[in-house]
Length: 610
Image (tube, rainbow, N blue to C red; front, side, top):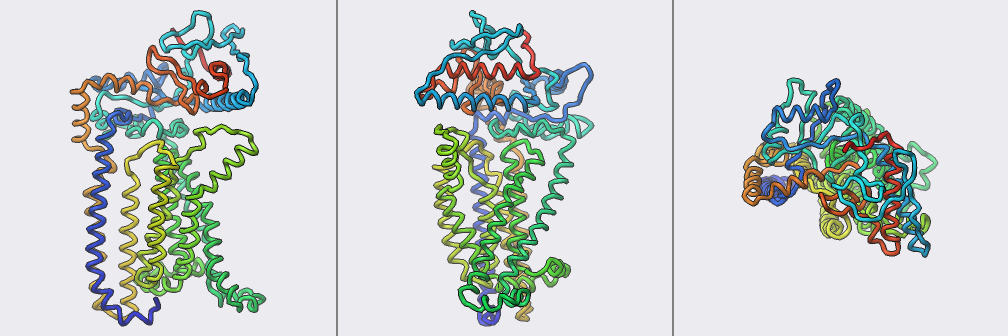
């Protein structure tokens, strides 16, 4: 919509802003309330969630002559004698985990050979303390049986990590949910850098590689990643400025005089100024999510969901700045800085710039929105990876390692960016709205199908990304009102501008009320809910079962991707390869156990004390 067509509809915009604001606020409030109820229902429904009883303790002080495990046990038995249950230390297990992964890959290779008609002989051996070789037994074993009768070596013969391999990090298990939450809400020592406690993530959500990083390095890592993200954002101004140069045909003709004759053709003009800039920008934007995920990994978050949330925020801020503001306020970097040097002129500049970029945003919706949905539906990346795996690597096994969880850090910022574009362009360029409505309708159907039928849910964070969605939507609404203020300023309508300012204030007050009313539920657990859950478990005599599950919930070294781990006392250790048709059954399991024992002998491990 051009600026010259505004005089006849300024009055209508002013009349429609107030009911629209009330409608938006009612919808946001009800949506926030609904998501909050769903989060509380998720907490109440997860009765067996081990993270409710678990506290992650970091920066355990070193005491000469004591291991970290002894120091931690002495501390919690002294200050939490009635609530402390047990603990599990975190170890430096990089070499062991690497050998475990190699053993699993070798086992899969032999399984593939066996399925092709070959035979597997139980030729796997592992060395004992006398450096002789023993064949691993194929008989069922139990955890409380340290050695078999025939002298073969068992899992329980060895301790995976000695005390000198411990990290100053541990998972501490409490007897009730309430006592675990209380331990995370207070300082444990007069030195805030020691005995740092926080609520432990779910067992499958733990990012074990980050736990071995010293706690005192975390603030330095966060500052370094923040500076790196800012530098990356400013470096990205180079391709964005180049892209915007393509949208301005007159400047392009002056810069490159030899292209004047070519640019006079209509189809070349439409391609260069319409379709090509958004395609180039989209190709450059594909490098942003991996870079932000790398920065978030350097920050060393304790959970996979925390890493994805951090990467999601970085990608969101990056796309809003580079895709929206830098493209709207096009020109050199110096001119963009001059625009923001005067705060009073920001609404006017936005009102003037958005109509000139309407065609670019409309093309961007096609190339980045509709195309991304088509690629998401077809799963091109996964399809190419499967082709390479099956026809080049000759691996025909359907492994669980190839299954992925939903990429929130790439899809959520894209959806929120289109929300921002829809709000801000609704006043000056409303023709983009039908295309955005089609995108949101298709996105709902496709994402719902992908979440239910394609991606797997490895963990559940309980809707922690919803406050990000709400805050971004409120920011888009406030920015839309500021642009409306600039439109009225261009038309010299002080009365309309005066009525628009209270709308901005009311929106900010509404956002603050939602932050005070609902946001604490997403940051802290309710004592009322936790105490009620503890009482239900106590009345149902379920605490002993929960305590047994806690002792094996957090397994640092995953033996296989199919959870080959010791079970409870008296149960058989399951083997992931026994159910593979044509794999040789227990013989392949013997091979895997042999390689695992060989890996343990190759590392600085020691025999477990009986």
